[in-house]
Amino acid sequence: MRIVIYGKTFEENFHDCSKDLFRKLQEYNVDLYLYHPFYDFLRDEVNQKPEVAGLFTEYSELPDGIDYFFSIGGDGTFLETITYVRDSKVPVVGINSGRLGFLANISKEELSESLDDIFAGNYSLEERALLEFESPGKPFGDFNFALNEVTIQKIDATMITIHTFVNDELLNAYWADGLIISTPTGSTAYSMSVGGPIVIPDSHNFIISPIAPHNLTVRPVVIPDKNELRLKVNGRTRKFLATLDFRSVELESSTEIVVRRAGFKILVLKLKHHNYYSTLRSKLMWGADKRN
Image 1 (cartoon, rainbow, N blue to C red):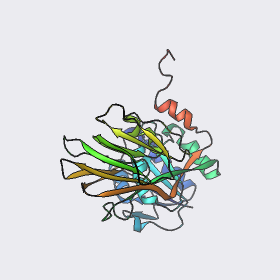
Image 2 (cartoon, rainbow, N blue to C red):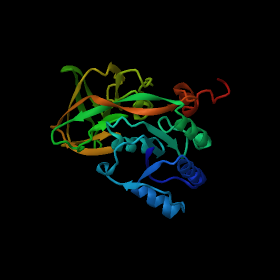
Image 3 (tube, rainbow, N blue to C red):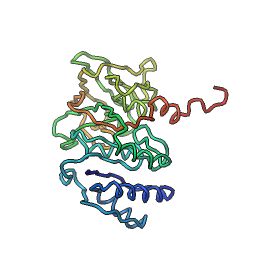
Image 4 (cartoon, helix red, strand yellow):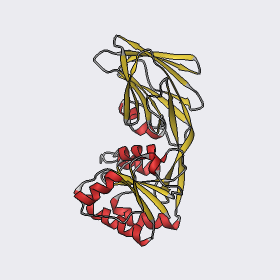
């Protein structure tokens, strides 16, 4: 079996869990491929030197025949992992080294049991839709996709106007600090922080959420993800910021952007005892108030 692991750093309270993880993987006799900076961190900061079949830094250095792609960190690390997984159809396993995450949802307390379940095949796979970002010049290189959201934002104190078309029909000219176009997966991320709704992962929708709109009657809109969005930005400044999950570029105001559903999906490994609604309750602390 061949497993690729992407990670960055983690706190000291995860050191023992990390050692247990690699010990367990060795017991299962897997071929490990580690992200090179993560391997350096384990060696230099955790005093751990896992046996590896190879190291990688770039997507082109990944081996063929990968069975699982482990992400060790939080939801941000999980999003970075997707830039290596791409359209490979390799299941992504999110191991959380800190607090509970929506994507990295295997906690350190259940890590050993979860690994046994994975190798025993006691899991299901969830398909997660992505957004494709299209604009002249390919500013995001050869991977112009986002799992959570595409965001258009101002770069100074002046608001921008974002003319938003759905299949060439004008939806609205948003005069705001920015606009978030989110997948259902991203509905619990940036979109939620500006008042967007929570949408269940397999809902096949986009959420369009303005950031601090000038007109208070403007609200988030949910549309089927079979639609294509076209965005035109103008304002007093010559540039605006475009973001795919964690990657950002500055674009000229004359740039036209098209956002559509990507032609592939990410496979997220889901353990049998995990439930999306229980994750919502835990992460958002629903019911934590004793009055509820």
